[in-house]
Length: 307
Length: 254
Image (cartoon, rainbow over all chains, first blue to last red; front, side, top):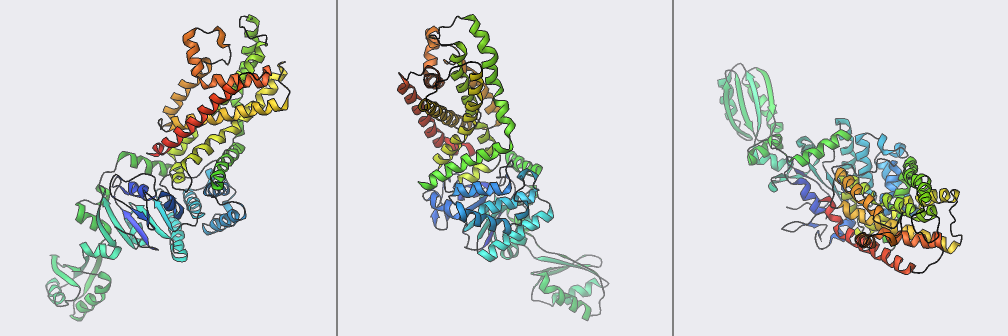
């Protein structure tokens, strides 16, 4: 498995699949029991120091000192990293602005919302001007608006600064919306890898259902459409199910065809394939159906509680 | 090297900034040692049963009470590390380009602030109780050095313990179990000369004994005979636990 420079890459899997373990190996916290891994060309086991110099990391749990202000957190992290004086002040000002935290900088972190804490952690990771940003479940426990804001910031970093973003998630929608490529993980094994479109294309087709006044005729004419249409059949009286490769492309053609034969459509519904369908195909279960490890669940719940 | 020192200073600064917001903790920590000096000391002094080589009893226990306070504060410093383990802070620190030894040394040094504060609160109270403290500034500097090295040593010891006791409850338990025996099995409140031999053996391997003995020499007695042995024991203890804690540090997040 490999991740390209400058891309947004997701590891998707249920709780306990090994996402966090993989990330902790890549960020040099633990050694792999077997195999090897490289970050920006550096071996995570033999060249840990070089790896640590080019990565930023945001763990799943909160990593700020709650009893200090946001600004003080950044000062401490920049000093630990070895950035001091004017250079530190410049970088702190810049990352605070980037993460929309300038106004809240002098407030204690214990007064922050969950989304602000996450953004402060991302700010702390950015102080070291990393080439790769590792985020473990970056939006767990955040409300939808806060999630969107965090992602807006992350995508901005990726686009404007070319920072490679590698994140773990068990939220499918998040992976589909923001990642370019993804790996599906289950029980410590990569079960599928590719761009989001490739992954979806590898398993299932989109499904379009029409409720029409003449089902027989609809089936007959749609079978002749050819390109993009995989299968057509009648589900029950008046309902026709069409399997297509890509609903966005085929839908206008299908509607036009039906319309041109004088059939009237009462209702159209489209079901697009999701990464969950991919997971279902390879594992036989949906992501939400796989039982997680208790420890990981506890960590998630703790994060949710604090958020 | 400069980044090594920067990291250590950053951890000391962290502690100073946190204390700025939680000052009451500094004062509540001083309550217990003050009780020893104000209540226990004068009462025991009336018994006149302890051979203290002519030193008034309250003066005799002053270095003991200061050192007890310094070691308690330092031993419970590991609790901070346990808390940071439960949050993501330690994980994050381990992914930054700082060496583990600078994390351990920096965190241990951070407890110097609390330790010195104890010294600064307790000493005037001892003076007010009529304890004669050695006025020579060189001796005062030596006293401060002894406080500092003891604080670093016992904090490193507590960080080492924290890498085995990974939950707050377990750490609190072991902390309580260690601190009182450490205090009573030392020369803090009675001289070694009156102890039965088996206890004397334990007292002689207790690092607190050497810290108290050293401080008693520089602060009260004013005669430095044998100070080198005390300092050597303290330095060996401190270096040993900094190394052990650094080696075991990664274990804490596993």
